[in-house]
Length: 67
Figure: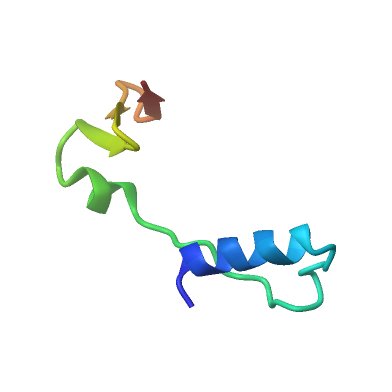
């Protein structure tokens, strides 16, 4: 089952008044290392639903996401 399917199944069950707490095991949240995502760059753009977001690494080595 894809994450998309799981979200829609959860919504369908919730709309039917059925709790998913007992019907589904907790899922692990996917994790990616920032270095793998940034690929040796200090900044990248993310296109989400037609809107461009900028993810960058600051001088203090923190991540900032802006629209």
